[in-house]
Amino acid sequence: MRWNHTIEVITEVEQTKTKGQWKIGDAVIKDLKDNDYLGNDAQLGRLTEIETSVFADCSEKLAEKGIEHNGKPYSAVYIRVLFQAAFSFPRDERNPKYSWDAHNEAGTPTNLKNAVTVLRKLGKTVTIYNVRDVIAKWAADAVAGREKEHDAAVAKKKAAKQKKARASADKLRTTDETKRSEAEKARQEAQKEYDDAVNAIKASGGRLPYNTDFEVDPNDVGELERLALYLGISIHVTDLKNVAKKMLIDVRKLASRLTAEEQQEIADGVSEITVILDQINDLVEKPKRKVSVIQGGRA
Image (tube, rainbow, N blue to C red; front, side, top):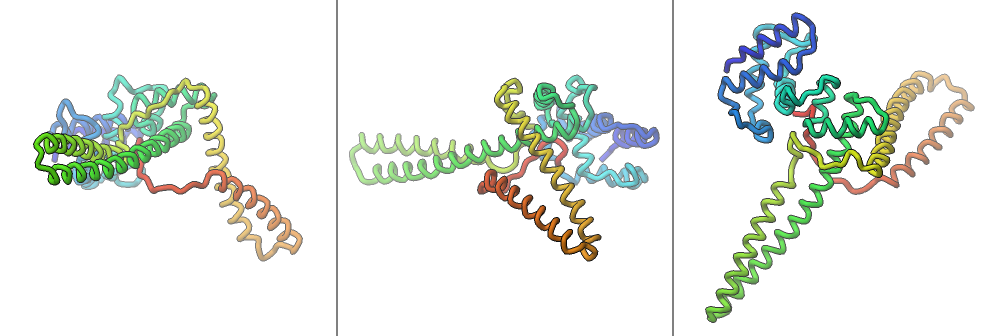
């Protein structure tokens, strides 16, 4: 494959030491079009099907020329992310007020606009971390909704299968043409319900599409208050994990030199913290299924 545009742009970006994520992504799009991997009507949902080997080919050609980013090779995964972000955000949809990272985390123009609206109403700045938190919450809600849809579709499939079996049995049991016709009609209806359920299972299963526009109302006051509390809790959790890691390092260094009184003081404090954390865990712990989410920044 030919990667003329991509190699030229990346070389320029690395020589000038500038941020060029958009320029690189646009160059990858040009090269994919030149190599007949993209049509003018291409949709991003289908673009995720482009083989990793395509981007790996680009990565290898860059490596052959000794082109690196911060001393590391341009990986196939990173090149795909640059491409997906550029394709998701056409030039007229990119907001220069916000970083490439914020766009990438949002995944789509609609999500970015909604995230900006929410963050402004919450009095928060539009940073990669705040956008990531908002999008992660919306993604989790979307996954939960898909799980419900999936479970409902599985139940409908089972019911349709049973209905189809009964209709087929009814048709076999009678020689009356009217009843046979009615049974056949019921069987066809059941077959359609079965097929619809199968399609619904496929649509609601697996990963969220990369370019998912989350159905949210950024002006919903009640939701904003709930989201503000959630984001606050999320920040506390991150801070707590960092403090706990630092505390563990310090205790390991000092453990053998602590007096009995100091050991008891620390142990009592940790016990109190553990009690509180257990109460929080009891409030939020629910059976969870493993889910995969792809949005901005993931390939």
